[in-house]
Each structure stands twice: as structure tokens, then as C-alpha cells.
Length: 242
Ligand code: SF4
Image (tube, rainbow, N blue to C red):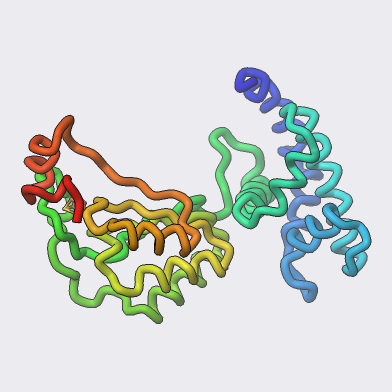
């Protein structure tokens, strides 16, 4: 299957990379009085009875044609595409790619309109002292963003088209406002992921992470047993958890 998809790329390049197709894509991805035309076009593609202007309906027909052709080329059913489009993250990812093609043409790898993922060092504070820490993380840096500044940054990243924020650090869970900012990211349509050293994850904290809608959590393990892991991580005893 992956091989088939690679073979489809030259066809995609011929089809979407030509100047006419890119001009049409620019039309589809341009915002106007109706707001985000691509989102309106996709709403129309998903529900042709929805109330929208003629430009958005026209854009919706172009999006429908593009997705129909893509489904044939890449061997993905149109039903799967339709159900993906109902997910905000998929939708934002598609917007990002289409805007990238409109602006830069079809490239390999594809240049997108905004970074797909921003890894955000949410704080410099950390409760470990890892031998390999490239940040020498310890205490918070002076002038770290406060909660309101962090939420504004989230909004700016959302406006720019970023799809995923991976909260990292330092140890992001050491900030009391972590959940407030992570939930704010999701309210703005951004997928929130968490890179943590895992030491603060009690059953209660795991429940909070789940309740906050964070679906991806990454925890590094640096040794084959507790002693070797702790030796690398610099604080004895933490591998058994809080
Ligand atoms: S857990 Fe990460 S941030 Fe903390 S000391 Fe280790 S490498 Fe540095």
C-alpha cells in the first residue's frame, strides 16, 4: 500500500502542482467576509444543504472533486475521508497541506503553510537532574510566560494554522496552569500532546490528563532497570513513581 501511495505522487504533482490548480487552491483557501472559506467549503462537502454563499459552495465543489480524486489515487475510501473531516485535527492538517500546495506547489517533502507541530518548552523547571539534559533544566527561567500570555500564544499558534502542540520542558506538569493552557489549546482546535518525565503522574494526575482530553503522553525510560534508569535521571528512587 505504501508503495502504491509513493507511485501516486507524480500524478498528484501533475494534477495539483500546475499553475491553474494552484490558483484554484488559493481561491479555496482564501478567507473573506464568510470567514474561513476552506472550512465552509468542507462543511458544504459534508452537507450540501448547509447555508453558505455561492463562493463557498463553489469552493465546496472543488474540495469534493479534489477529495474524490485523492481517494482514488491513494486507495482511501471517501467515507473514511468524510469521517476524518469531522475531526478537528484532521481538518486542520488538511487545511495546512492545501494551503502549502497553494503557496509552494507540490514538493517532496511537502512544504506546509505552518509547522504541523510546535514543541513548547512550557517551563524550565524540572524535578530531575538527567545526565543528558541539554537544557540543564532546574528552576523556572526569569520571564517565563504567565498563564494569560501562554493562552495568547496558543491563540496565535492556532491562527497561524499549527496543528499540534507538544507540551515539554523542563517538566510541564510542574506548572499549575498546565491543564488550563492545554485545554485552551484544544478549544482552539489544536491537538495537545504531553512529553513528561512521568514522575508526577499519580492515578489522580492520570485521570486529570485523560479528563483534559490529552490523548498522547510520552514518557522516556532510560535504563533496563530502576537502578540504571535512576542513575541516568539523577534522582534515586523516582522510577518507582510518586
Ligand atoms: S526530565 Fe527532561 S528536562 Fe528534566 S532534567 Fe531530565 S532531560 Fe532535563
